Length: 376
Image 1 (cartoon, helix red, strand yellow):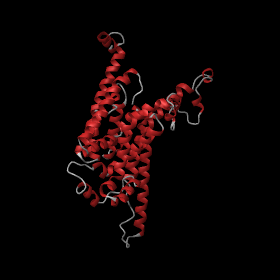
Image 2: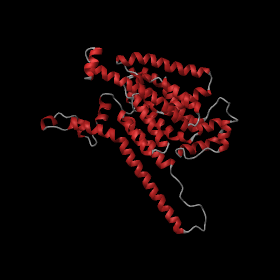
Image 3: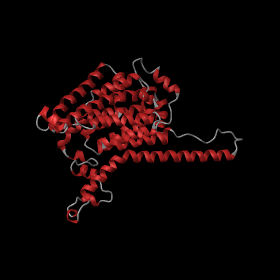
């Protein structure tokens, strides 16, 4: 019935048109909702409303916006990922698992959401449990506390394993479905089944990426014709690397060598080591102006996002098609927090440069992508 209605309105192919319009509406709503969620997540994580607001504005005009506007999964993936991470950081663990599972159903890289589950349960929530240091404390109480700590750690590990399995379930189901369609059948058809079916761990996703996309370590750089795509990815790579560097070594750069050791300890502890208050006060007062923000550098909740963005950046540069990095890295909130911090801390020329980057990629992408030319 719906197809006939749309067919009468738009002519032949009404069902396809209906699907396209449905996709556009869902994508548009998801895109707007993702901007709101990014703002709220920024307020929770970086604890500075100005950074959160500017990052949401940058997201609305980000260079990969053509994919967020077309019938594509980017908007839905960003919304589900950020909702999931936000729920985990707010203490709603299983609600976050549900959202991250939906993100995994939208895009295969949703499996990276497992990292936030592990960080929250095994790093953020990990406590002491070694007693209060009183020499008169009863040994039996010490043993009971140690046993409670072990049981608590076991429960947290179990939660991560179960939650991670749920998040990865859509990806696994996709692999199983591909194996069922292409690797099973009658003896007559089995003779022509693809070679990947006989591998120890058959993966239709890995096969397609390797056979049709030439995805592999440094494979993208083997053809000189791809050089323009490498140049195209430079701005987002610089932004991603610069953002990770600023959070890791920001205290050293802002307050001198005295901040080097705390910065490195915090990096190696996955964010569990806090900066000393004197360093925080010095960064916010003596070494910064009223307009300067160091929220991303100071806040410890940024830690899991730094490792998440660093891993994605490494994969973008060395494994996948680097030109896709502009779109691929846009699912990291830290990328937009870093951009917001960069423009807030600089002059008007930074705003103009960021606007030129976003506007040019939007304009060119609107021409390239609909006409099936390679883009971000």
